[in-house]
Amino acid sequence: MIGDTTETVIVDAPQANTVRSPSDILRLGVATVTLLVLLLVQWLFGDTLTTFVSQLLRGLDALPQWIIDVVIVGTRVLVVVVIFGGFVVALLEGRIRFLFHTGLAAAVAGGLAWVFDRFSPSAGSQAVHVSNELGPLTDTGFPSGPGIAVAAAIVTASAPWVRRRWRRAGWLLVWGLEFTRFVSGPVSFDPLRGLLIGWIVGSAVIVLFGAPSRRPTGASIVRGLAAVGVPLARLEAASVDARGSTPYFAEATDGTKLFVKALGEDQRSADIMFRIFRYATRRELGDERPFSSLRRTVEHEAFVAQTAQGVGVRTPRFVGLATAEPSAFVLAYEAIDGKSLDRLEPEQLTDAVLDDIWSEVRLLRAHRIAHRDLRLANVFLSSEGEAWAIDFGFSEVAASDVLLANDIAELTTSLASVIGVDRSMHHALVAIGPDGLLPAIDRLHPWALSGATRTATKEQPELLDAVRTAMRAAAGV
Image 1: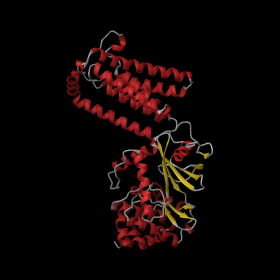
Image 2: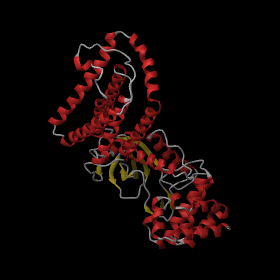
Image 3: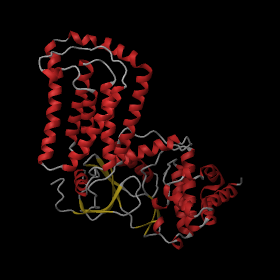
Image 4: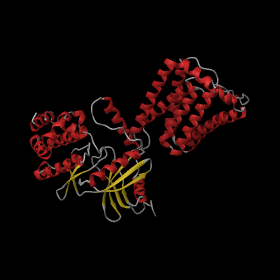
């Protein structure tokens, strides 16, 4: 049966009960920036905007009164029932940690929103009128800004603990509550500000205390690959340097050895934050815009890997792409029998091996494929003594000169840290010539190199200057 994991041996990496996720950190940053922008807009244009929106929404008075009452009162009742119902269910199930997180978020968000409301400018007029026959449920002050902040904080803080459909339902109710407060009470910035405060506080609680891991389990990876025609007999977590993914070694049911990598929203969030940081440095790094979704990111990696293989580059054959819960994607490649260069002894990097490595680089350059992470861990030496390029997760096709030059700077420096500057530069010069080395001179800076290579240069403080001097001499400048 497709998706059955009972016959598969799974050796998964241990997971902590709670983790701090890059996705939560990114969410907290986005919420904070959005609130600051809102406060700036309110300070500069508050009265003008509230008056304009009040007049704009006057047309809602043309709706029959019963429709207005049903929508507004119904939404309010549903929110109250869901929040208190969820509290009771969590209490009966003994989910004390969950209740503590959501309760703390609600209390802090409500308090902060109340403080902000004390300094709020005057509001516009009421957009629509609600019948006042149902007491508090029809009061123009219900829900208040702090009330919306409480609801948003509860939904945000509880998100990692509940299923996706409940998260979506929760946010749908919060936005419904936001809308009813916006049109039935005096028009102001209070509802939107309260929502953002709740979002910030809920995210901060998750970042502070952690949340259940959202990394896909080995079982979900096995089910995903089986669904695309790659059934596994064994899956085992791998202790290898795989930046931006969770790696596994696997064996298919036909005996084929595979390397499997899982990428989830955490990896995408970390990549986006990394790109934001790189953009903020205002250096010429050659970064492209991030893809619109994790799916597009993973598909791009598979595309580049297949493109490289198609032009003759030795890289593992792409086997399959699959989905894995929760919200993750899985890439499977044929495994190579060998070791990455960072796991070899220096004497194993013979002249023949170095020539073979640079022949692969020369082929990549000939087709303008930039690897963008060409460090020792991403070059494999097979048991037959052949060099293989792996992990095209950050790569680009039709690459710019900057990206191609960065590959040369990365590889020459990382190799020099192991085999010495002179040998590294000699093989680079033979492979790509002075014209190929010349653009790479300006890329020999810590900010242009990978974390692993930067670490090597810190351990050998004179290495980077020595590589730069040798490359200048080899390029004839």
